[in-house]
Length: 476
Image (tube, helix red, strand yellow):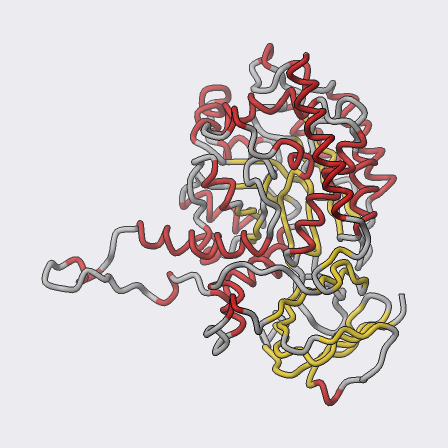
């Protein structure tokens, strides 16, 4: 790979053990690994590739802990614009089942391009409908084409409508075939060494789309291999809670515990409708939670207790969720939204203390620990996400860590008047695109443009594939 020098950044946000923010600093990289970081005058001035970061802020690459890349094909579907989760899923299932291998490839390129352009360097994709020629191999090949660090699920659905599940029978798979293919994918693609670019996650879709036996067998399979994670949707809506109570007599977290699904290698998407006992349980067993604020608002699912998770010591990261329930794959937008939504949730709680008295001002004082700060949410999006997906080699900029980072230009109209605190400006102000995005020392976004693919051509081909997918569904 050679050497790379990210030179003369106005600010470097390290997220290291001391949470250092370095002014007028540089970072030197060899073969994808950070070798030096510090004052610009103390580092080399030359390398095989030099990035001039004058007037820019450099941050650790953002980690997207939950996505459905194939859903870029069905964004903004008119029939699904104003309905909540279960109805929304029913509107999409059969369309998604028609996704061809080429459409899948194009959707991954589009989604990963958006992510890279918004500072994301690592993405977990939760794909779970493998019909019509679509398969994990196609998805992984497309992610490699663009160059992001990629955690990929061999997801699954096995419980169709005729057996009490939500998805149509035509969209589910036989459980033996699911487990056999999952093991094949792990053996073919999973790498557990530091710096690995591809890891596999075992990810049945949800408690209402798979059987208890598949949940148990999936957990057993994942734990046969080092570094293979377990993931599913959980506690996303009240409908789901009713489903597990009516079907199994248990709340969703209780049900997953009975399936052997609470542990260090597990993280759940959404995790909105949890009580204090369940939050404590997540912290105690090491489960992670992926907060997906835009999708949760879009589908009126609720507000996850992000700040409470952090206070309890639960591993928590951010996810953009599917591009048909978010209609975007922009990680900086997700950072901005999560930051504001946490403050809104704080404001919705009853005020405490003497501020309830009528003679006091209407602005209720809040304890310092209740506020979500800009630096808090950046930590969730970097170190937090890395912890959720089980990695200690990414998430911060320090010697010996992977060279995954991105930069944003500071001296623009969007940050005018905000540079007394440029770190906080990246969160408080309108989300900006990355000027550079680098993954394991390779430049993926170069001065605001994708380096590895012809993005206008990909978008044109993707849009045509999207129309074909919808037309074929209507014809069927």
